Image (cartoon, rainbow, N blue to C red; front, side, top):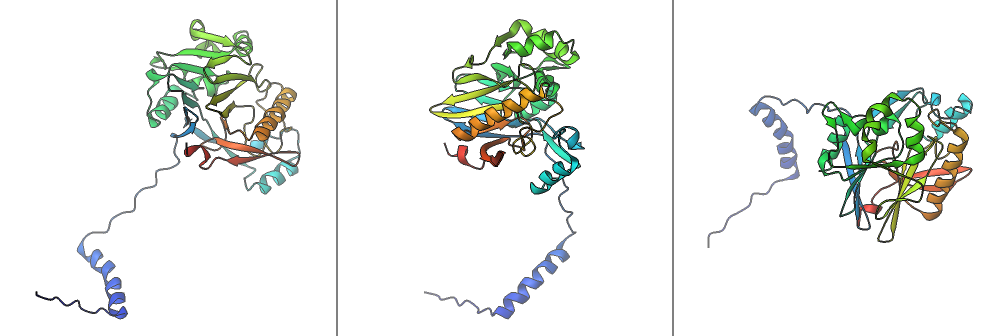
Length: 311
């Protein structure tokens, strides 16, 4: 058998070879530019398991809003707002808003909760999750603010051609009498295809309406139950992971009835903390899924990590 000898390479030889390699590469051809930065993502999705359900949060848009105390903590001093924000390591001069519809695949129906700012945003977000608008069986509208009904229709007409619609009766009746342009353009044309419900009613098997009035007159949350697991689609009863949870009595600009909204926050946050139930908040940092702990006089947000990825 013919033998082969392997040359011994000293540490000095290896260091010299490593130093020479980059120079050789540079001499061999033109320099390559770094990959360009792409900016913040405007769409994304994350799917988790809840019993037999697949629950997917959809980032249908985001934006930066200046002067957040003009929206949150309107009834406290600038010093108190600044101190709370500093403790949480967030700025006081701007906040990042997320717009997060949720799609639930029950195995027999595809149920979409809210539709984002416009049809392009929700269509792109659904595509990111592997769905098309014509696959949606039920569209649930938690309340009638523009960032929840904006994707119902667009230049191409109705966005979800095969869907039926569900919303709270109190909410629908309020906006129908309000002379609101957004409601009249987006929701009213779908009235004949819309089922009006009340708290405790069922949207589909395992999906129950929960009254969460205050943010709007008939605002609804929705409790999901599958194979012994629960999750609350919270919509807008709490809109910021610090300013709404840690300080549930702080007034919020967009809450129609501020006293009722604060009572709803305390009640539902207390329920979530007691039951250790995960929730999806429409404006929470994406993927908008987390847990609630009781802390001091308020509550603390615990972001989801991998708890619902292991089913």
